[in-house]
Amino acid sequence: MVTMAAPLASFGIGGFWLKLFGQEGWLGRRWFKSSLRYTALTTILLLSVVLVWAAIGPHDTITRSLLMLLATYLLGQVALELVSAKLQLEERYLSLAMWQFMPHLLRLLFVSLLAFYTVNVMTLHSIALSYASISIGMFGLGCVVMWRMYNGQFSLKGHGPLLATPSADLATVTMKQVAGQSWPFGLAGVFYLIYFQSDVIILKYISGDEAAGIYNVAFVIMTAVYILPSVIYQKFLMPKIHRWANNDREMFYKVYRKGNCVLLLLGLVAMIAIWLLAPWAIKLLFGDQYGAAISVLAILALAAPVRFTAANVGATLVTSDNMRLKVKLMAATAATNIILNILLIPPLGLNGAAIATVASDLLLLSLYIVSANHSVFKEFKVR
Image (tube, rainbow, N blue to C red):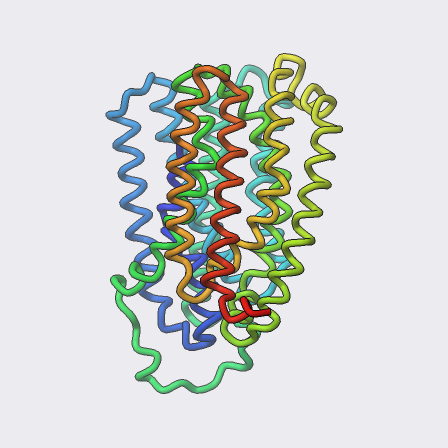
């Protein structure tokens, strides 16, 4: 629940910064102050909503206390997003990798200590406390980095050296203007999580906690598989894609065409690897009691080539003024996914949730391809 709420915290500022500096170059500095104020406001509002929902929602005692503890995860995610965007714009990819890996490594270390070096403290609340501590620490580090960025410690790549800019051009924009530009990126993150993770939550309420836990095993493995296209596009290529979209359309189109072929091939390789390794990996990592997740993972693997290709096509829809169109496509897919889950889970259980996910991925890829060809690359249609 907290993970699905996380994109609302900064509501798309990270993605907006990548587009902004791709279009404006160094002039984009004029958005700093209002962007940070907007992020603070949306984070405080969302944190308040989550805490209120935890207090008054239809939860048992354990869920209520866990929600309150894990609400701090929102703070860590805000810091993770903003600092990641800064490092991407600076093309400091090693630092970016270390920054994004650090919270996962710290969680693993904390949980390992709880599991192997202490007695009778491996509880839900102790794990939640470790997650909360790490999130608060990440938030503190992120605030330091943002403060330095605000005070000029920023090295934008791909736009030449920083030149003197007329003060009129650097006039600070308002939070209203920031909201008007960033909301599509925020909604895109929300809709992505809805159609990607709603299966687990719907399973919890329809089939119970055990079914949700088994499905989540397959979901976690697919999440690991999808790291590859995410790293390629969201972390490495995205700043370049924005530059090409505005300054080198031929390169933009070339990367799009070749990217479709390469990502489809990688997705097929991933699908076959999952089919071959899933029975062994699930039992080794999670135990025989999660054997039911094998068939679920076999179905979800069908989405790998689809999701890989969608990462390439969808990246083109983030550029220029196409983001609003992408949000509409994601909203339609999220709504379809929820409907399919409600229809398929009662008769088919875990496999129904997996089928709903694969069908949603196919729908989204189809919508992406049609939209990219008609809206993004319309000048190349005659070729």
